[in-house]
Length: 547
Image (cartoon, rainbow, N blue to C red; front, side, top):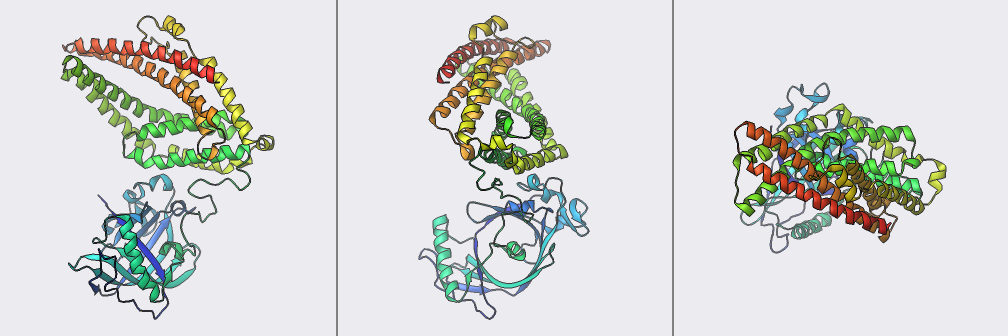
């Protein structure tokens, strides 16, 4: 069942019993002003907020609730946004019966809500249970402009809230000022309007709310974002003060950023957003390479377990990504052929592009299924546990300076990249005149590419973000390594595409279709592979000189 999405921009104020709402007539910015006020009949709202046992949603400033009463009763998810909050809403009927959700008894959360954007990756396969129960007696006053449109809504709330896990009951009164559909169109003007309304609210005796939300106040907290269980913040800053400057600390902080990137990319991958699979695959590879580069800093069994599980996940991502690349390569090659020679071959386009895109859709469905299963969820658990335990690295390694450790690791990785590199003439001798791989012939070049990629990742890791302790020379090493990786990647893509074209042409011929287009594409791919080897040679020499 489809959900609706809206942006909620509001400010909250604490107010004492007996306080009365001010007259907002005339309040505004000149461009937008309150002409009249419409006060509605009081209503009662009952909300139950849900979370995992360890507060995974709250720790990422996400609120999931079921609300009864009011015009918008239903299932709601509130997500952080650049301005205000993004709210997703489903009808209350979605959860009737509770058979398809997580939870206990009558408090089952519908599966469709659990699997919503940015929720599934945090909840995983853990049960959702009530976190807080909030009952609100609300009186709404709509602030209208001269046309009768709603500029803002003022909610006068008497709240009774119970922390469902601690058993604490809290009572308070608050005013919420939420912008309506007739509010200004720009963030700057919206803020100015809220400031103008706030002046009257504060003059009436209200003060800024001590909590950002009813859920936070129900839990006795000023805001969401820190795990009730005492875990780290959603930014992954679980490395203790004083540890960040050690070798283990700076690596742990950088790894935490990469783990956070995996979680952040999860919804985009599920939605098959443009380049999302590629970015997640790159992040997974970067994680594996960083963990390998700094292997001496960590306990070996957990590290190798994480790297192995990342490798398996990367393989599933690779199936989808490789089909993306193949379809993109084929579409570009066919467009180029049509532009150069006026050749339009619908049969070839169907086989090389349409059929591969259909295969991609199947692969993506398998990827999403894997990302909804226990193996993927346990990988996320492992990554978070690894980050949490990282500061307890070996004492002798932790004592070394971060900069010295990063330089040593980069030098070692650079030597390995050069040792694994392959000169163009050696590659041609192995691969033969067509530069197209027979079985296993691309192995040495692929190993060279992986070594260059590991060096690039090590250089970028040590110059960017939380682990950025090295300077311009390390950046230059990373740039040269990327050039080598890209050239070798171009050769591999061209070679594999040539192989694919050759195999597809045989199927086309067997079906009575013309093989002309395939022949041209094959030769062009071979020529590109040759040029790529020459570029790789240049990049190899530049990298060796830089190191």
